[in-house]
Structures are given as C-alpha cells and as structure tokens.
Amino acid sequence: MIFFNKRHFWFIPFVCVIAVFSTSCDNLIYDYPEDCEVTHSIRFVYDMNLKWADAFPSEVKSVNLYVFDNNGVFVKEYQGMSDELSDPSYSIKLDLPLDATYQFLAWCGLDNPNDDPESFSVMRPVAGVTTITEMSCRLKTATLKGKESSDQRLNFLYYGYLVQELKDPQKKADFIYTMYLTKDTNHVRVMLQQVDGNISAEEFDISLSADNGLLSWDNLPFGNTEIEYLPWNLTTDILGVGNSEGEMVEYTGVVADLSSSRFMADRTKDIFLTVRRKADGELLFKVPLLQYALTEKSYYELAYHHTMTDQEFLDRQDEYFMTFFLGKNLDWQYVVIEILQWRLVIHNYEVVS
Image (cartoon, rainbow, N blue to C red; front, side, top):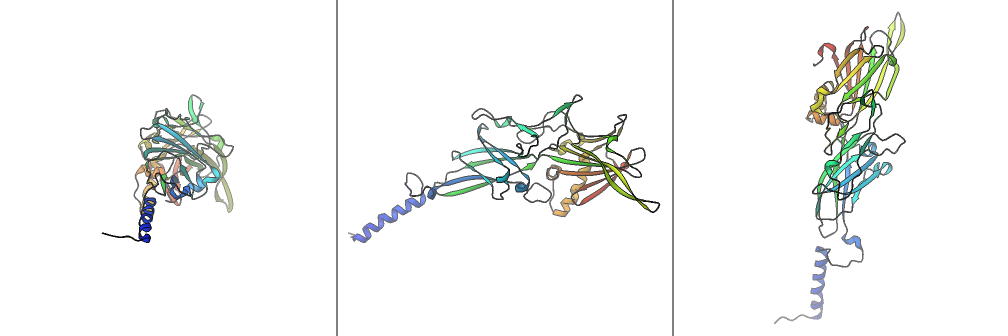
C-alpha cells in the first residue's frame, strides 16, 4: 500500500493540468487569447531580375491577392496599396478556415496610386462562383486603323501563384509563406542615329508587334490577337558628337520608348520591331527583337554563375536598349544592344532570318 501526504496529493494534479495546457488549445480558457493564437501570412518577393535581389518594396505599388479553394473556386480577395508595400516586412495576414488547402493567385500593379490610367484589368470575382481559370489579365488597348494598339507607358504588372495548406497546430504558432513574383511588363528604348547626318522623330514610324495582350490565370499569353505597341515617347535628341574641320558638331537622332506585356521564349520569331519612313510608308527595317535580346543571356550566366532557360532570362530582363546606326539611305548598318552593363554590336549582315 502506498501513502501520499497532502503535499504530494496536490502536486500531482497540478503537473497534469500544466501538461494539458502546453499541448492543446482546444476547450480551454485562457486569460489572454494571444497565448494560443495561430497566424498564417503571405509575404511577397520579386527577385526574378538580373540582380537576383528583392525589389518588391521599391517597385510594386499595389497587390490584389485572390484566394481559391482546392477545387479552384473563389473564396476571398485581399488588397494592399502603395505606402504599406514599401515596408520590407510587409505581408498579408490571412483569416481563412484552417486545415484546408488553398490556391493563391496574385496580380500586382492593377491599381495605380497615381493619376495615370490603369494598364491592365482583371474580372471582379464572385465568391462561390468564379473559378481560377477565369482570372485572366487583359491589357487595355485601343483600335487604331483596324488594329489593337497600345501607346501607353504601362504600369508595372507582376504575377504570383502559390498552393498552400493552412494547418491548425492547436498551439501558438506563426506561419509565413513566400509568394515569388514575375514581372510581366517590359520597356523597350529604340534610338536611331545616322552615321553622318541629322534625323528627326517626324521622319519615322516605329512599332513593336506581339500577340501578348491577354495573360491566362497561369501567366501564359493566349489568343492570337496581335497588339501593335506604339511609342509613348518619341522625341528628337542629341545622340552624337563629331569633329568636322576642327569643330565639334552635334548630331541629332531619334529616341522612342515603348512598353509591352510579357515576352515569351516560344514566340521569339513572332515579335518584331519595325521602323518605317513616315513620308511614304516604306519599310526601312524589321528585326526580331527577342532573338537579339537573347544573345545577351550567356554573359549573365557567366557573370552570376547561374544557368538560365531562355524564358527565365526574358522574365528577369525587363528593359531593352537598342541603338540603330543608319546609313545615308536610312538603311541600318549595325545595332548596339545594351542590357545593364553589357553591350553587344550586331552588323546588318549578321541578321538571323
């Protein structure tokens, strides 16, 4: 027979109660609710660039995060805007039923905090009705001369997708999940310079053609509507300085800035930069923009010791600078391509057909 004194009798139940409180949050009363709080949050990272550095706080101006259940049916939307996104610790705290799996789809940059018009649009989903496959993103265009056209400086657009199970651990815990973003907008700067003379913006029509105005829920262009991208900035500027009979002479050239939606590696032969003479519409040259741009990939693979597919390179690169040097008859002699600190010269006879 075992005997317990009073001190032992009271000590044993006390230990058992503490054990229950430390392993479960069910059916217990706490003095402070946060003692058993479970939080689930999503943070955003945009490091799909050629610096391999997170630029989310400095670049992204708005977030639309759409939540779908495991069957792809819309549940809820979260939004974030401008100032709060610049905080490096920014995340969206989720208030969703736990022990369930969700699909998270983000289109970032739909809302513009400035007075500029919105560049892209997504349908307004209805809870319990809209499916994730309906959440395509459409470029806002105008019809000019029978063509779908865009002559706007596009606000930066970013895409993200994440499948995540939200568990209830039945004890205090903080879960933070990371959604990685891909930038879907590109800036193309074209400069025209005559090797021995002056030219002006009024002499040229410059355009970029691509069928990428509609992006599906999984960020792939679909449909076959060709978009004609026109310059949102077209100016005459001083592009060169030469020496003529002992005197310095300035040469004027043309600067054109164009924006485009996402570039795809499997469509490199369908995306062309075209320059025409405005006076008679004569085609001066038509070049495959992305085939030229992809010649830069090997440099960045060597510089950063990172092997990339063509698509990864196009997703990381979002600015393309090209200077075309023209002859007396305005035919181009060679082009200088600049991406960050790398420069490449391609002569006309090296054109890939």
